[in-house]
Length: 171
Image (cartoon, rainbow, N blue to C red; front, side, top):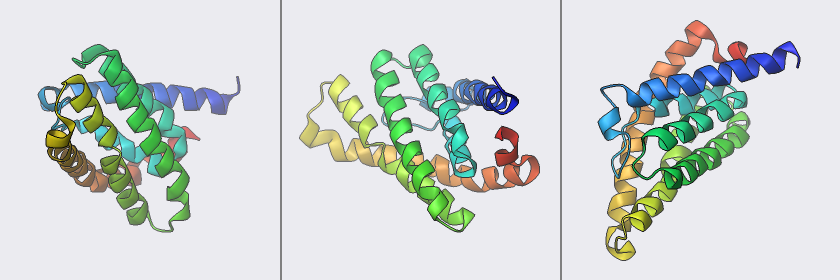
């Protein structure tokens, strides 16, 4: 394996570890699952805006956290991992078409918030809830909580990028 591929794997392993640390920290663990999700680790979704090579690390981070800590177990691995994979893949595909960083970050916030539809469906399905009665309130709470974390963390990730240069770290 050449040095570039090794670097990508090592950096993504560090992203997985960082995702776990940010998810299980005292400030976010109690709100990391459910209809209101404030996972500080979701700020790592912004890494894909800087380089699509971060996609694997973020998705695996989601899946490992859900496997180890979600009350829904493997179902949350599938739905949460799937939501992250679909959303971040869309961002990785669309973001390079946008000329400005703020546009790419905005796209990421919108896409990751809207794809929370999968998590809303998961919560309703696993909770045996009446879809017609609880879909919109559940989906809205997920959009708002994901959007809040993503909006709050976007300028922070831009500032961190100025110091560490995310794209250069993985290439």
